[in-house]
Amino acid sequence: MSGNDNTTAKIHYICQTYVQKPGAAQGALGIGKQFQYTSASQAQERAERESRSDECVGADAYMVTEDPNSGEVSPPEFLVRLGSVPEFDEF
Image (tube, rainbow, N blue to C red):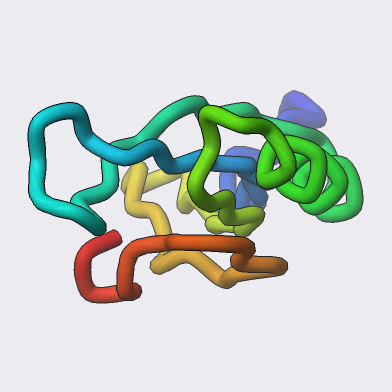
């Protein structure tokens, strides 16, 4: 028996930025950058930094849980949402 437990859910902490889509209607957002971190605080700090940049119109920091057996990923649990971000239904 190995010590590898494949039943433990894996948590992903993500920072995702948004940009205005070029040539699209005002308010149409596109994903800018995406970063993955090992902690919630790292993702949140990056979202705060990115939201202050000129090319970024908004940023989310969120976590998702992945089931290693099925590969299914939970809906995002937002840590922070800054600036212009899509509605959850559009996410």
